[in-house]
Image (tube, rainbow, N blue to C red; front, side, top):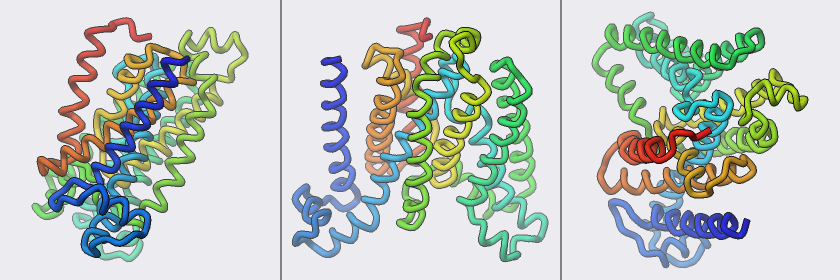
Length: 333
């Protein structure tokens, strides 16, 4: 326990340092003193204050919540399916969001309904969230009639593949401008989240994180298999529903606001297990949230420095972590 406490303290300090660095580093360098003055209302250059408060702070806070959300969602999916390669998008959440955005950006112009007021009011965020919610609602409805969790996993993957095919058809038929907008969305971005959007995103993600904390005990029981959990009195159907609901609130919301940010939800739970040497979700859930925030803030720093899309950086950092963990520990569960 003393080791875990020390690790949590060190990771919190690291996150604080990285958060300040994310506010200071960019196309315009700002000193740590000016960052502190801008955050506390002290005296500093007005241009620097605007950059920090109106641009960089929004991105940094988005990275904190998005990283924690994706990591917690990925850990839940890996435990539920007892599959180390499962992630927050395994049930088709990302595919559903992609379909929603594709229908909004690519399908509406093809059908001639892009000018309708209700279509315009939906927006990319609304279309992505609606698409991911509908897909996961379908998976949840099916899961109530299927006992075998692996069948649900396969159905989710097949559903995602089918949706991907529909999206490719829309891409093939769309014009160049609409296609470019869709491709840019698939690269992910933390910079599109405005203050108003962040005020909507944070409470939804927070609700998903609270739900993930509420299912810590069921997740620990599921480590030993659904049959064992059943004998211990766990309501499997209710537990699945809560975990699926948490996933849509976490992964669905992040995808809607930031695009499909990959590899964070897949890599971070493995990193948490490796660092804390524990399978107890009382440790892994908060550890994954913390490490997810750290990883995405680091990715944001690198993306700004290299001028790369966020998805490129998360993949370059996430893939080696997954390969390393799989090689070092084949018996993850």
